Image 1 (cartoon, helix red, strand yellow):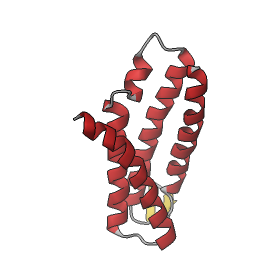
Image 2 (cartoon, one colour):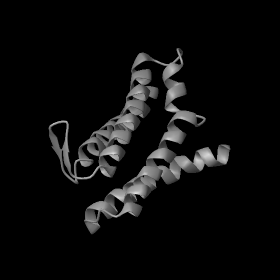
Image 3 (spheres, helix red, strand yellow):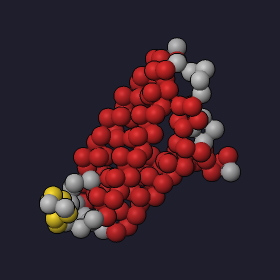
Length: 129
């Protein structure tokens, strides 16, 4: 089980990046690209919430500084935003509750996730020092 958790932490983000690049470069709405993206999100979530150094466990520890717990919680919110991106990726183009969603509407939550990840990737080591 530990090996799977470690591998999901490496394979999940790679699948996310590969699927996003394939979607943008090939300009294809193929099902296998969307499934690859969703699989990457699921693997990343498994690692984030159930891994040894998971963000969920780190955010509940009271011996950590408040800033560090906030950063871990932000990373958990980023994963939820990433699931919104997957939902938008599987929706067909059209109107939903008065909002017109295009084929590339999944990119906005993905960019929000990326910004959260980049911010926390640089801030967490700085706060832990």
